[in-house]
Image 1: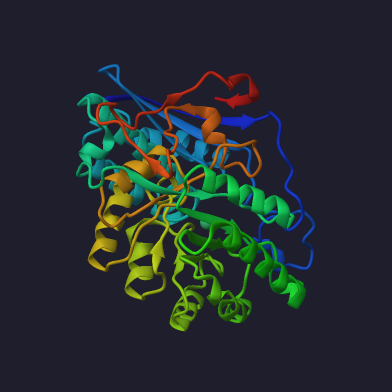
Image 2: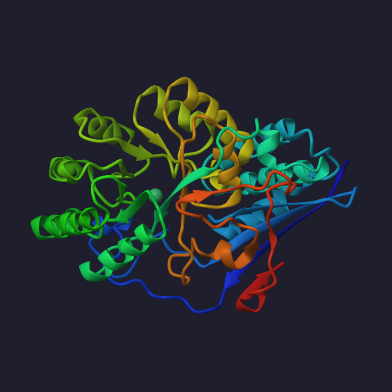
Length: 390
Ligand code: MG
């Protein structure tokens, strides 16, 4: 089997977008003097889809959500020529070739997102070629079904927040994640508002449901050190990305406080990035995103590393590529799930682009043993809502 074509397209949402309210989630831009509604990389409304075609007629689909137009350029100019003509089953070799040929500028960030998209497409392709789901190529089923957590609960008026949390309880979720709205520039009043959010959700869900809290890199070490003791009574399962991804010492310091687990890695890349985080004991929970970290080829190596160091892997975002990895690894006890809703921050777009994503039942996701590849395909249903850049 040979790869004959790599087709990278950007799908730009032109449909309705729900504008987020002020303070709906902290992010790394917040500490700058000019905040406005600048959400940095937090919001996006476009998505990269790559299709890898072969002489056998099989087509693999991969995707990436970091700077899609630049990803497309990286694929068109640099990566596609490296893989065309190759056997997709030589995926480890192809990963190394893409990595090593772009090493000077591509080993982290958008270059690795582009490699991830192609790698995911190769795994989808291999699954389709042997008529097996991807998780069956990765080690198979390690769990009967996948526990997942409802991940939304953006900062909002407390009565609405309580209503949203109540909905997830009615739907049977056993774990939920909320977003903080205030950070270092908001002082003591902001701290109180953050605590109000956590208290509101904890009161609705009770003591037996796992509660996680997301900072999206919007805090500093100093601020986080002050917040951690205040959050301790709420028995968090983890505090997520309290400081920017490059502040590894900050993660280590917060972990040393030993009040509750610290999670990170959503903005880290490849086995080398995670080797650092794991060996330095910087995080208690690893949250790579397969379509950034280096695709399934990189993610499964990180799973093995995490297993050896007893660090759980709970990938960032929903999406099939993450679910196949969770299903096939004992190091991965749970998946994130974004409840379907209007387009707000951009994460939701994959529901509008693809069909085949499983929906949770009572907080569990199931994968089909007989659906080949990733089990998703491009959907035409919302195509008119996108500009497609070829
Ligand atoms: Mg996160």
